[in-house]
Amino acid sequence: MYSVAKARLTKRGDVSVDSAFDNEKATSRTEPWDQSDKSDLEGGMETAVKEIVSGSSKKIDAVCVSCCRYLESTTPLDRGMPNSRYGIIEESAINRAWKGYDLYGRCRWHFQEHGMEPEIFVQTDVNLAALGEYHFRRNENTLVPPEDIQALIEAGYDRHTAAEHIARRSSVAYLKLSDTIDASICVGGEIIDTLANPIFGWRRPRRLFYDGIRDKFSGTCRVHRDCFSGLISSKAIAARLAEVGIEAPLHTLPPDDPIDYIIAHYAAQLCETLNAVFFPQVISVGGRTVEDRGKRANTTTRDISEIILQSFLNEIYSDYLLRRYPNHDDITRRHGYGNRLDRNMPDVGFIQPTRSEYPVAYGGLYYAGKEALSPNMGSANSRRKNV
Image (cartoon, rainbow, N blue to C red; front, side):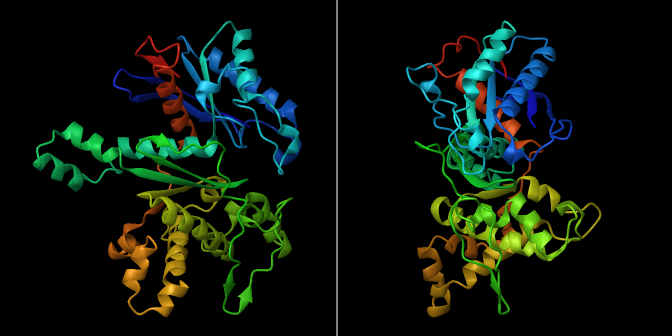
Protein backbone atom coordinates (compact mmCIF):
# COMPACT_ATOMS: atom_id res chain seq x y z
CA MET A 1 0.00 0.00 0.00
CA TYR A 2 1.26 3.46 -0.76
CA SER A 3 0.22 7.07 -1.23
CA VAL A 4 1.42 9.56 -3.81
CA ALA A 5 1.09 13.33 -3.71
CA LYS A 6 2.37 16.04 -6.03
CA ALA A 7 2.82 19.72 -5.35
CA ARG A 8 4.85 22.83 -6.08
CA LEU A 9 6.79 24.83 -3.52
CA THR A 10 6.37 28.48 -4.47
CA LYS A 11 8.86 31.29 -4.12
CA ARG A 12 7.25 32.33 -0.83
CA GLY A 13 7.74 28.83 0.54
CA ASP A 14 4.05 27.91 0.32
CA VAL A 15 2.88 24.52 -0.86
CA SER A 16 0.57 24.43 -3.85
CA VAL A 17 -0.95 20.94 -3.96
CA ASP A 18 -1.56 19.64 -7.48
CA SER A 19 -2.87 16.21 -6.47
CA ALA A 20 -2.93 13.78 -3.59
CA PHE A 21 -4.39 10.32 -3.69
CA ASP A 22 -4.28 7.15 -1.64
CA ASN A 23 -3.77 3.83 -3.41
CA GLU A 24 -4.22 1.69 -0.32
CA LYS A 25 -7.63 0.46 -1.47
CA ALA A 26 -6.46 -0.07 -5.04
CA THR A 27 -3.59 -2.39 -4.16
CA SER A 28 -4.32 -6.02 -3.49
CA ARG A 29 -2.48 -8.01 -0.85
CA THR A 30 -2.76 -11.72 -0.31
CA GLU A 31 -1.24 -11.74 3.17
CA PRO A 32 -1.41 -9.57 6.32
CA TRP A 33 0.76 -6.44 6.16
CA ASP A 34 2.79 -7.55 9.20
CA GLN A 35 3.76 -10.77 7.38
CA SER A 36 4.93 -9.11 4.18
CA ASP A 37 8.59 -9.13 3.16
CA LYS A 38 11.02 -6.86 1.34
CA SER A 39 9.60 -7.88 -2.04
CA ASP A 40 6.35 -6.14 -1.08
CA LEU A 41 8.26 -2.97 -0.21
CA GLU A 42 10.23 -3.18 -3.45
CA GLY A 43 7.09 -3.73 -5.51
CA GLY A 44 5.34 -0.79 -3.90
CA MET A 45 8.37 1.43 -4.41
CA GLU A 46 8.65 0.49 -8.09
CA THR A 47 4.95 1.11 -8.74
CA ALA A 48 4.91 4.44 -6.88
CA VAL A 49 7.95 5.75 -8.79
CA LYS A 50 6.35 4.75 -12.10
CA GLU A 51 3.17 6.66 -11.21
CA ILE A 52 5.14 9.73 -10.19
CA VAL A 53 7.21 9.73 -13.37
CA SER A 54 4.32 8.97 -15.75
CA GLY A 55 2.01 11.50 -14.14
CA SER A 56 4.45 14.41 -14.06
CA SER A 57 4.90 16.73 -17.01
CA LYS A 58 7.58 18.78 -15.24
CA LYS A 59 10.99 18.08 -13.79
CA ILE A 60 10.74 16.60 -10.30
CA ASP A 61 13.08 18.42 -7.92
CA ALA A 62 12.49 16.58 -4.66
CA VAL A 63 10.81 13.44 -3.37
CA CYS A 64 9.91 12.52 0.22
CA VAL A 65 9.41 8.87 1.16
CA SER A 66 7.44 8.18 4.34
CA CYS A 67 7.79 4.98 6.33
CA CYS A 68 5.53 3.47 8.98
CA ARG A 69 8.51 1.74 10.59
CA TYR A 70 11.41 3.20 12.56
CA LEU A 71 14.48 4.32 10.60
CA GLU A 72 18.12 4.19 11.63
CA SER A 73 18.74 7.77 10.45
CA THR A 74 16.54 10.58 9.10
CA THR A 75 19.20 13.32 9.11
CA PRO A 76 19.41 14.63 5.51
CA LEU A 77 23.12 15.45 5.81
CA ASP A 78 23.78 11.72 6.29
CA ARG A 79 22.80 11.05 2.67
CA GLY A 80 25.74 9.81 0.64
CA MET A 81 28.13 9.72 3.60
CA PRO A 82 30.41 6.66 4.01
CA ASN A 83 28.64 3.89 5.93
CA SER A 84 25.52 6.05 6.15
CA ARG A 85 22.40 4.46 7.66
CA TYR A 86 20.10 7.12 6.24
CA GLY A 87 16.68 5.77 5.30
CA ILE A 88 17.40 2.19 6.39
CA ILE A 89 14.61 0.44 8.29
CA GLU A 90 15.42 -0.71 11.83
CA GLU A 91 14.62 -4.19 13.05
CA SER A 92 11.01 -4.33 14.20
CA ALA A 93 9.31 -6.82 16.46
CA ILE A 94 6.23 -6.36 14.29
CA ASN A 95 7.92 -7.20 11.00
CA ARG A 96 11.50 -8.46 11.17
CA ALA A 97 11.55 -9.12 7.42
CA TRP A 98 11.78 -5.37 6.70
CA LYS A 99 15.04 -4.97 8.65
CA GLY A 100 17.81 -3.37 6.61
CA TYR A 101 15.67 -2.33 3.64
CA ASP A 102 17.25 0.80 2.14
CA LEU A 103 14.35 3.13 1.35
CA TYR A 104 16.63 5.96 0.27
CA GLY A 105 18.93 3.86 -1.89
CA ARG A 106 16.18 1.87 -3.61
CA CYS A 107 14.05 4.95 -4.31
CA ARG A 108 17.10 6.71 -5.78
CA TRP A 109 17.88 3.64 -7.94
CA HIS A 110 14.33 3.44 -9.33
CA PHE A 111 14.37 7.11 -10.33
CA GLN A 112 17.77 6.65 -11.96
CA GLU A 113 16.24 3.84 -14.01
CA HIS A 114 13.91 6.47 -15.45
CA GLY A 115 16.78 8.90 -16.09
CA MET A 116 15.91 11.20 -13.16
CA GLU A 117 18.00 12.45 -10.22
CA PRO A 118 15.66 14.24 -7.77
CA GLU A 119 16.66 15.06 -4.21
CA ILE A 120 15.28 12.21 -2.08
CA PHE A 121 14.41 12.50 1.60
CA VAL A 122 13.11 9.86 3.99
CA GLN A 123 11.11 10.39 7.19
CA THR A 124 8.69 8.46 9.40
CA ASP A 125 4.99 8.82 8.66
CA VAL A 126 4.14 10.06 12.15
CA ASN A 127 6.74 12.86 11.98
CA LEU A 128 5.46 13.94 8.57
CA ALA A 129 1.86 13.86 9.82
CA ALA A 130 2.74 16.21 12.70
CA LEU A 131 4.49 18.55 10.25
CA GLY A 132 1.56 18.36 7.83
CA GLU A 133 -1.02 19.12 10.50
CA TYR A 134 1.01 22.09 11.72
CA HIS A 135 1.26 23.71 8.29
CA PHE A 136 -2.30 22.82 7.28
CA ARG A 137 -3.72 24.40 10.42
CA ARG A 138 -1.45 27.41 10.07
CA ASN A 139 -2.53 27.95 6.45
CA GLU A 140 -6.16 27.69 7.63
CA ASN A 141 -5.41 30.38 10.25
CA THR A 142 -6.70 28.03 12.96
CA LEU A 143 -3.37 27.55 14.75
CA VAL A 144 -2.33 31.11 15.55
CA PRO A 145 -4.95 32.91 17.70
CA PRO A 146 -6.08 36.14 15.93
CA GLU A 147 -6.20 38.01 19.24
CA ASP A 148 -2.51 37.26 19.84
CA ILE A 149 -1.60 38.62 16.42
CA GLN A 150 -3.71 41.72 17.03
CA ALA A 151 -1.94 42.34 20.35
CA LEU A 152 1.45 42.37 18.59
CA ILE A 153 0.12 44.62 15.83
CA GLU A 154 -1.05 47.09 18.47
CA ALA A 155 2.44 46.87 19.97
CA GLY A 156 3.94 48.09 16.67
CA TYR A 157 4.60 44.91 14.65
CA ASP A 158 3.32 44.50 11.11
CA ARG A 159 0.86 41.64 10.56
CA HIS A 160 3.31 39.32 8.80
CA THR A 161 6.03 39.71 11.46
CA ALA A 162 3.48 39.23 14.24
CA ALA A 163 2.13 36.02 12.67
CA GLU A 164 5.66 34.65 12.13
CA HIS A 165 6.67 35.45 15.71
CA ILE A 166 3.69 33.59 17.17
CA ALA A 167 3.98 30.72 14.69
CA ARG A 168 7.54 30.02 15.90
CA ARG A 169 6.08 29.28 19.34
CA SER A 170 3.10 27.32 18.03
CA SER A 171 3.03 23.55 18.25
CA VAL A 172 1.02 20.55 17.10
CA ALA A 173 1.34 17.00 18.39
CA TYR A 174 0.13 14.11 16.28
CA LEU A 175 -1.14 10.88 17.83
CA LYS A 176 -1.39 7.93 15.45
CA LEU A 177 -3.95 5.23 16.21
CA SER A 178 -3.62 2.64 13.48
CA ASP A 179 -1.71 -0.59 12.78
CA THR A 180 0.83 0.87 15.18
CA ILE A 181 0.53 3.43 17.99
CA ASP A 182 2.90 6.38 17.86
CA ALA A 183 3.19 10.12 18.35
CA SER A 184 5.27 13.10 17.22
CA ILE A 185 5.52 16.83 17.88
CA CYS A 186 6.10 19.79 15.57
CA VAL A 187 7.14 23.14 17.08
CA GLY A 188 7.44 26.29 15.00
CA GLY A 189 7.23 24.28 11.79
CA GLU A 190 10.11 21.97 12.76
CA ILE A 191 9.91 18.30 13.68
CA ILE A 192 11.49 17.44 17.02
CA ASP A 193 13.81 14.78 15.63
CA THR A 194 16.43 13.17 17.88
CA LEU A 195 19.15 10.55 17.43
CA ALA A 196 16.49 7.86 17.16
CA ASN A 197 12.75 7.81 16.50
CA PRO A 198 10.68 8.07 19.71
CA ILE A 199 8.66 4.92 20.41
CA PHE A 200 5.48 5.92 22.23
CA GLY A 201 3.55 2.76 21.45
CA TRP A 202 5.85 0.43 23.39
CA ARG A 203 5.17 2.02 26.76
CA ARG A 204 2.98 0.07 29.16
CA PRO A 205 -0.18 1.92 30.23
CA ARG A 206 -2.31 1.86 33.36
CA ARG A 207 -4.95 -0.79 32.78
CA LEU A 208 -8.59 0.21 32.47
CA PHE A 209 -10.47 -0.34 35.72
CA TYR A 210 -14.08 0.81 35.70
CA ASP A 211 -17.03 -0.02 37.92
CA GLY A 212 -15.15 -2.90 39.52
CA ILE A 213 -14.16 -4.44 36.17
CA ARG A 214 -10.52 -4.61 35.07
CA ASP A 215 -9.40 -4.88 31.45
CA LYS A 216 -7.91 -8.38 31.25
CA PHE A 217 -7.10 -8.43 27.55
CA SER A 218 -3.68 -10.07 27.24
CA GLY A 219 -2.43 -7.92 24.33
CA THR A 220 -1.07 -8.74 20.89
CA CYS A 221 2.43 -7.25 20.86
CA ARG A 222 5.00 -9.95 20.12
CA VAL A 223 7.51 -8.45 22.57
CA HIS A 224 5.63 -6.54 25.29
CA ARG A 225 2.17 -8.12 25.00
CA ASP A 226 0.24 -5.36 26.81
CA CYS A 227 1.98 -2.16 25.69
CA PHE A 228 -0.13 0.54 23.99
CA SER A 229 0.37 -1.06 20.59
CA GLY A 230 -0.56 -4.45 22.03
CA LEU A 231 -3.80 -3.07 23.50
CA ILE A 232 -5.28 -0.62 20.97
CA SER A 233 -3.57 -1.12 17.60
CA SER A 234 -5.77 -2.25 14.72
CA LYS A 235 -4.68 -5.85 15.28
CA ALA A 236 -5.38 -5.62 19.02
CA ILE A 237 -8.83 -4.13 18.49
CA ALA A 238 -9.73 -6.93 16.05
CA ALA A 239 -8.56 -9.50 18.62
CA ARG A 240 -10.60 -7.80 21.36
CA LEU A 241 -13.74 -7.93 19.22
CA ALA A 242 -13.09 -11.56 18.27
CA GLU A 243 -12.94 -12.49 21.97
CA VAL A 244 -16.57 -11.41 22.36
CA GLY A 245 -17.67 -12.97 19.09
CA ILE A 246 -17.69 -9.84 16.92
CA GLU A 247 -16.15 -10.37 13.49
CA ALA A 248 -17.51 -7.16 11.91
CA PRO A 249 -15.04 -4.46 10.77
CA LEU A 250 -14.52 -1.61 13.21
CA HIS A 251 -16.20 1.00 11.00
CA THR A 252 -19.46 -0.99 10.93
CA LEU A 253 -19.98 -0.95 14.70
CA PRO A 254 -22.65 1.43 16.04
CA PRO A 255 -21.67 4.87 17.40
CA ASP A 256 -20.59 5.04 21.05
CA ASP A 257 -19.74 1.34 21.04
CA PRO A 258 -17.92 0.18 24.22
CA ILE A 259 -14.76 -0.34 22.14
CA ASP A 260 -14.60 3.46 21.67
CA TYR A 261 -14.21 3.96 25.41
CA ILE A 262 -11.52 1.31 25.67
CA ILE A 263 -9.55 3.00 22.89
CA ALA A 264 -10.12 6.42 24.45
CA HIS A 265 -8.92 5.33 27.90
CA TYR A 266 -5.50 4.30 26.62
CA ALA A 267 -5.20 7.07 24.01
CA ALA A 268 -5.90 9.61 26.76
CA GLN A 269 -2.86 8.37 28.68
CA LEU A 270 -0.67 9.07 25.64
CA CYS A 271 -2.26 12.53 25.38
CA GLU A 272 -1.47 13.04 29.06
CA THR A 273 2.21 12.31 28.38
CA LEU A 274 2.30 14.62 25.36
CA ASN A 275 0.60 17.37 27.35
CA ALA A 276 2.87 17.06 30.37
CA VAL A 277 6.12 16.96 28.35
CA PHE A 278 5.42 19.27 25.40
CA PHE A 279 2.18 21.13 26.26
CA PRO A 280 1.19 21.48 22.57
CA GLN A 281 -1.55 23.83 21.41
CA VAL A 282 -3.30 20.95 19.65
CA ILE A 283 -3.09 17.18 19.82
CA SER A 284 -4.24 15.99 16.42
CA VAL A 285 -5.50 12.39 16.48
CA GLY A 286 -5.36 10.43 13.24
CA GLY A 287 -4.90 7.00 11.73
CA ARG A 288 -7.11 4.19 10.54
CA THR A 289 -8.86 3.75 13.91
CA VAL A 290 -9.88 7.41 14.01
CA GLU A 291 -11.15 7.22 10.43
CA ASP A 292 -13.20 4.12 11.27
CA ARG A 293 -14.66 5.64 14.44
CA GLY A 294 -15.06 9.23 13.25
CA LYS A 295 -18.23 11.29 13.49
CA ARG A 296 -20.97 9.95 11.24
CA ALA A 297 -22.61 12.37 8.80
CA ASN A 298 -25.95 13.85 9.90
CA THR A 299 -25.66 12.44 13.42
CA THR A 300 -25.12 13.93 16.86
CA THR A 301 -22.82 11.15 18.05
CA ARG A 302 -19.44 12.07 19.48
CA ASP A 303 -16.25 11.77 17.49
CA ILE A 304 -13.67 9.38 18.94
CA SER A 305 -11.40 12.38 19.61
CA GLU A 306 -14.13 13.91 21.80
CA ILE A 307 -14.32 10.69 23.82
CA ILE A 308 -10.52 10.74 24.16
CA LEU A 309 -10.70 14.34 25.41
CA GLN A 310 -13.26 13.38 28.04
CA SER A 311 -11.14 10.42 29.11
CA PHE A 312 -8.16 12.78 29.35
CA LEU A 313 -10.15 15.05 31.67
CA ASN A 314 -11.19 12.09 33.78
CA GLU A 315 -7.51 11.13 34.12
CA ILE A 316 -6.58 14.63 35.25
CA TYR A 317 -9.41 15.14 37.74
CA SER A 318 -8.98 11.66 39.26
CA ASP A 319 -5.24 12.18 39.74
CA TYR A 320 -4.06 11.13 43.19
CA LEU A 321 -2.63 14.59 43.94
CA LEU A 322 -5.88 16.27 42.99
CA ARG A 323 -7.85 14.03 45.34
CA ARG A 324 -5.37 14.44 48.18
CA TYR A 325 -4.98 18.20 48.20
CA PRO A 326 -7.92 20.62 48.41
CA ASN A 327 -6.02 23.42 46.65
CA HIS A 328 -5.81 21.40 43.44
CA ASP A 329 -5.32 24.50 41.29
CA ASP A 330 -1.71 24.83 42.50
CA ILE A 331 -1.11 21.10 42.00
CA THR A 332 -2.44 21.10 38.46
CA ARG A 333 -0.27 24.06 37.50
CA ARG A 334 2.77 22.31 38.97
CA HIS A 335 2.04 19.30 36.79
CA GLY A 336 1.51 21.30 33.61
CA TYR A 337 -2.30 21.13 33.53
CA GLY A 338 -3.21 24.44 35.11
CA ASN A 339 -3.57 26.58 32.00
CA ARG A 340 -5.75 23.99 30.32
CA LEU A 341 -8.08 23.72 33.32
CA ASP A 342 -8.21 27.51 33.70
CA ARG A 343 -9.37 27.76 30.06
CA ASN A 344 -12.29 25.38 30.69
CA MET A 345 -10.77 22.58 28.65
CA PRO A 346 -14.00 20.77 27.63
CA ASP A 347 -14.88 23.80 25.54
CA VAL A 348 -11.34 24.32 24.25
CA GLY A 349 -11.21 20.82 22.76
CA PHE A 350 -7.45 20.78 22.19
CA ILE A 351 -7.63 17.06 21.31
CA GLN A 352 -9.02 17.03 17.79
CA PRO A 353 -9.23 14.82 14.69
CA THR A 354 -6.82 15.65 11.88
CA ARG A 355 -7.75 18.68 9.79
CA SER A 356 -5.90 17.61 6.65
CA GLU A 357 -7.27 14.73 4.60
CA TYR A 358 -3.70 13.62 3.84
CA PRO A 359 -1.52 14.83 6.75
CA VAL A 360 1.43 12.55 5.87
CA ALA A 361 1.44 13.63 2.20
CA TYR A 362 1.02 17.29 3.16
CA GLY A 363 3.89 17.08 5.63
CA GLY A 364 6.04 15.22 3.11
CA LEU A 365 5.58 17.98 0.55
CA TYR A 366 6.73 20.61 3.02
CA TYR A 367 9.60 18.48 4.27
CA ALA A 368 11.00 17.68 0.81
CA GLY A 369 10.51 21.21 -0.46
CA LYS A 370 12.11 22.91 2.52
CA GLU A 371 15.05 20.51 2.66
CA ALA A 372 15.64 20.89 -1.08
CA LEU A 373 15.82 24.67 -0.60
CA SER A 374 18.27 24.36 2.29
CA PRO A 375 21.66 26.04 1.64
CA ASN A 376 23.32 22.71 2.51
CA MET A 377 21.62 20.94 -0.39
CA GLY A 378 23.04 20.97 -3.88
CA SER A 379 19.76 21.74 -5.62
CA ALA A 380 19.09 24.98 -3.80
CA ASN A 381 19.83 27.11 -6.88
CA SER A 382 16.18 27.20 -7.93
CA ARG A 383 13.54 28.97 -5.89
CA ARG A 384 10.62 27.05 -7.40
CA LYS A 385 10.44 23.35 -6.69
CA ASN A 386 8.24 20.48 -7.80
CA VAL A 387 8.02 17.86 -5.03
